Amino acid sequence: MTASETLSLRVANCQYTALADERATLDIVLPMIAEAAEKGAEMICLPECATRIEPNRQSLVANSQTQDQSQSLKTLQHTAKSYGCWLMIGSLMLRAQDHDDRMVNRCFLIQPGGQIRAHYDKIHMFDVEVNDGQKYRESQTFDRGHEAVLVDMGGWRLGLTICYDLRFPHLYRQLAKAGADVITIPAAFTQVTGEAHWHPLMRARAIENGVFIVSPAQCGTHAGGRQTYGHALMVDPWGKVLNDAGDGQAVTCATLDFKVIKKARAAIPSLDNSAAEEISLKIF
Image (tube, rainbow, N blue to C red; front, side, top):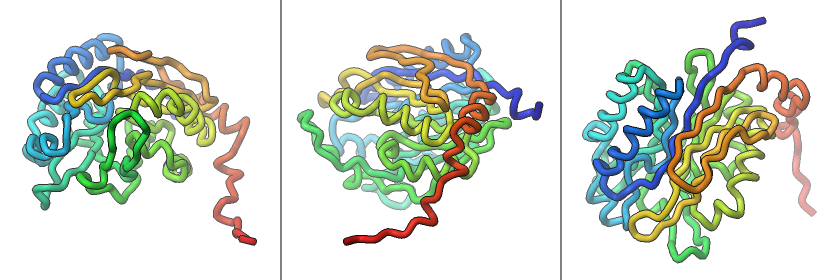
């Protein structure tokens, strides 16, 4: 057996209801990280908007800091170091470095030593109306990212994505063809779209790419009345749901086995069989 075939990774998803106040949210998050570490997690995953969900754009921008200023980021780096674990911060909403009125929705992977191993800025902006009484116009506030991110993480190759990215399968195929074994999809999915699409889309991204999908999630009712779906998932490359956090606060764990990736890709080698680059289009 090769070294990769004997790899396993103990992963935890943290699911909770982020508040508008970062310090108060961290008072929820930090004990959950401790619980995950006690359960043996080597990588602990937080959802999108990990430290706050604001009631409106004005308060979001007014209460934001740049990456260099972010005390929440520093706290989470220190926490990862104290437990000696990888920490995937689903996203922090940060002020753009060069524009006081623009922001980035940025995911971080923190090394066990507390250093930032990589970051990813959300590419696809959630500009939709889903009939839940809210209007979502992320592009009015956030600058979108322009680069997919793949990280070597102790023998595992991790692809970073965020929430609405889920609906754009070409991003996941690009990451898988580049070598991703696990792709994270931290989310603050709306209640309405979650009930309709969350489970089938998560399973589809895992199945079509032969990867593990790890999706920590926000849940409950937030400031301003926004409702998020919960149901943080881990899905294996065959589409099996390893765990589902339901609709309340929870820490869920699973051990990812590298051999499952090899078995799924051997059974249905869709990455090798893909002919999308060779297909021409005729329009009549």
